[in-house]
Length: 352
Figure (cartoon, rainbow, N blue to C red):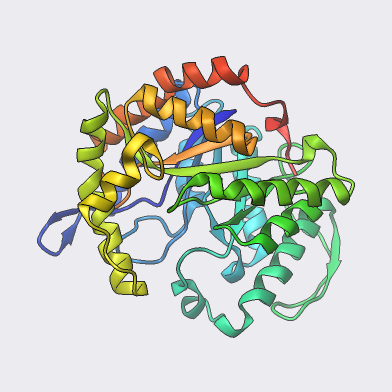
């Protein structure tokens, strides 16, 4: 089972009403990606957002900078809000990244957890489902063949269009990102695409039936095992001592929960709730290296995940704490996970 990381480029608050500079967030992201690459971690994903609390609205540009200073790590979106993107331009951008990186680019195509991009780019939330379905179909068609003739509802038609550049290898790796919608699992399986489960709350074991649904749909559609690839994700932090990880992570996690309560009407969880969520790294993977390794192995066995990625910097956990956490993931946790699963998953090379 591969291990990696993801980030939204959270801008932590450094003074009343002031967030850390965007340029500093970018520098820190590059340092983290370089460290992850040096440690042999296999994946780093950057999310797309268009809010002041996040620094990254264009993951491809930051990933291109990372490509120039890394050697082997996969560089991906996590996710691209495909519904408000032009699939032609997105494909060109990531085919360029794929060429720059020697075949290490990946697009996680999702709908996103926020909707600010719809108004920003002139899309209607009334077309929420149709936009995604059509744009995913076009993106896959461009990836599959060139030139392409195509027509749809939401952009101008293409007639014998030559889309350049092409990827480094035969095709880009395109995954379907989902927060747990069964229809998304079935869609990914039927299309023979990798699936990525964004687990930001609750027990990760609840995703096991969705993974089974995904693999069953893929098999019934005739896609062999090497085309079936599952990425699971977790939020949390690793420290030498379990309680240090829990104490460090709490205020940043709680800040995000307060934001969610305001934006979406959640009830704000208490410290007692948090202590329950982090007990044994059950829901929130905050703990010692041994604790996190045991949890990753357990959930990896249950879900048959091919890759697990950790989101460590919610609300801007300080850079030095994130760097230490990455170091522990890439050394002590990875050592145990590799020993249990026998190194990199054989399905880890699937491109489309």
